[in-house]
Length: 196
Ligand SMILES: [Zn+2]
Image (cartoon, rainbow, N blue to C red; front, side, top):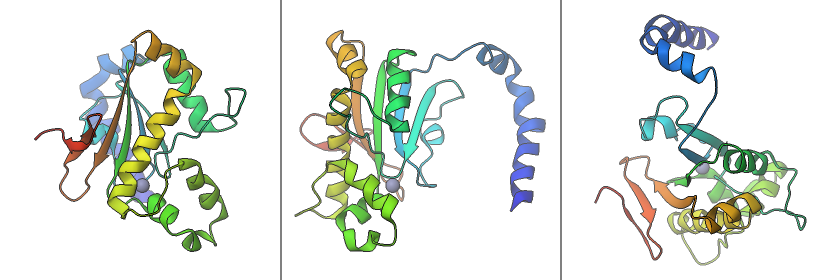
């Protein structure tokens, strides 16, 4: 297992790094990502691969269920996801945020079946922060509903709210289908395939 990691690192060092020396020298002095991606921690979801983005382009926050926790009454949160979002928006000034849900999301399956999370108390507490109502919908619909709930949470973040007021940021709700590679975006009314 560790051999596999070392092999990957060796390949990066020998084959990839030499082709991007200028890029990494530039990145060593700072970052200016164009998009904050809030994605699931699921190993099958790889935002940089999906969007063919280079280091420095995407500020990526990942957690179980691509959840944006609601803030406390004072507009802050103990949560690391909230801190990362605040930094990306208030300090880095990202002009886009994508909440990236995905098919077959285990976190959303857990939200829909609380009994399955009894041995996983931390997961249970975390997915409850989704705010999406799992009743009356199948998993695919819940995954979409969850993305919309996180967009609503994002809009309550002071930094995001201020950027929205200044028309300095756009929020996007996407769902990635792992089997087909298709990505659907919410257009204000429904989720439709981005590439048609
Ligand atoms: Zn997931």
